[in-house]
Length: 311
Image (cartoon, rainbow, N blue to C red; front, top):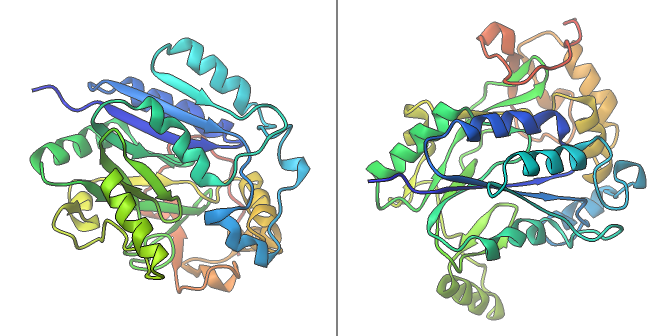
């Protein structure tokens, strides 16, 4: 029996350093695959409207006519030409912004007309081919499973990885990244990702009209969901290079309103380890601890700049 087709979904702005890894990992898969990449800047609306209260803004310096400034656009066009029929790039007309990230993740769904495993892969979330293959096998072993949660090696610097469980970067509701997709499924939210079918979407809408909180369709302890413990037992721990480049931190400082993020992040890189991240990054409210990746034997899957010296 042939493995299910895989559809990967990535939204990106200025993610050029990470693109090649994804293509190399996907290209080695034995399954049929398609990568849907949605490029451009998203307005601070809907899911990310919370950052406005913190002073979040979309600086003109962070994009060019609503698109990337670091070569991402050109790299995506080249990759799509090199992999015809396997990579589709979605963009707004020049000068326009996406109406929040939910519109971005929703853009490809009309093109996915088959049942498949749908994978949200943020541009800085790196999976190996072997991990993807083992995840597919896990879904085949659990035909009732509708989605999967994972843990990750969450980088807060080129050589700093979080080691805490159940806290920032690896909380119990993270990372929901794979779903059994059915044509007609839709996104109700991006943060956290909520993918529902037509009937479920109608029920959610009815609950909202009655002033009742919508129920997330998947909980970590649901019997029809692959838990973090289940996926980790198979070695399914991806790398999330969330804070490895200063350009990433500069973006988050503006977009999410993390005042002083760049200087705080630089200080974190110089700290002696293990280090409590919230003592350096003020937007981290949980007691998460980081250690040197090199001490833990965790090697980033793409080349990174040399980290600053420890204090």
